[in-house]
Length: 90
Image 1 (cartoon, rainbow, N blue to C red):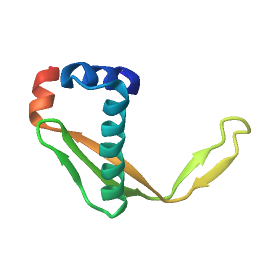
Image 2 (image 1 turned 90 degrees about the vertical axis):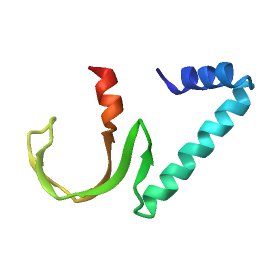
Image 3 (image 1 turned 60 degrees about the horizontal axis):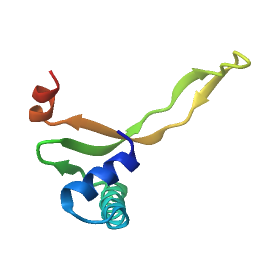
Image 4 (image 1 turned 180 degrees about the vertical axis):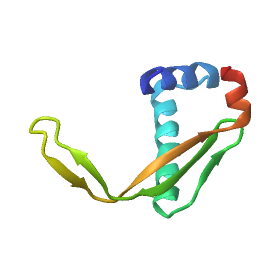
């Protein structure tokens, strides 16, 4: 499912227009991103949690030249599914 399909589903279930559904989804995603930028963990009960962690510097290889490079430390978003979601997927 992509964002357009999700917006269409939200609009259909909620009885609202696709424009309203997209605006609502965008607001939710913006608030989630803002919270993670502040270092907060975002928990969606029954779905999972998102958090930002720092990935340390590591060695890598340029696939074109084969030259070794150092990938600098950077932040990444980690997702951990809720137990109820994990059970439904099995």
